[in-house]
Length: 103
Image 1 (cartoon, rainbow, N blue to C red):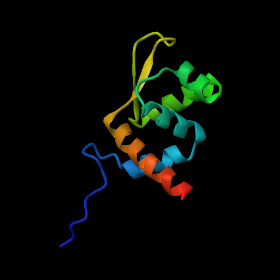
Image 2 (image 1 turned 180 degrees about the horizontal axis):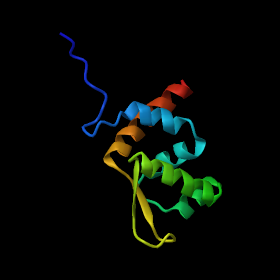
Image 3 (image 1 turned 90 degrees about the horizontal axis):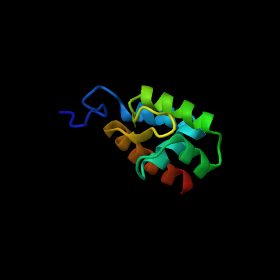
Image 4 (image 1 turned 120 degrees about the vertical axis):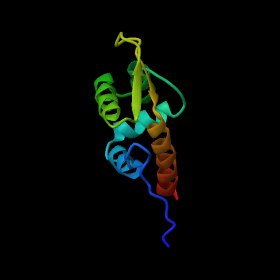
């Protein structure tokens, strides 16, 4: 009998597929790492990592499409982003992945 757990979450999203997608972009990696500390807005993320806000905004849109982040607020200047439940799972995997890279 095979007792291996299915890696897909209840909504059918495979966190390892999402991890592979995130690892493919420096900006997506920075965003997920930043949001693992708590909600933030694009301007603050851009300033913290000295990158252009357009890169952050594009990355947030891509991550929202993959259910990694969700936005709160209507004004683009004050909109906050946070990790979804799926995003938190992937952020944990990203931490483990990055620790393995540094070994």
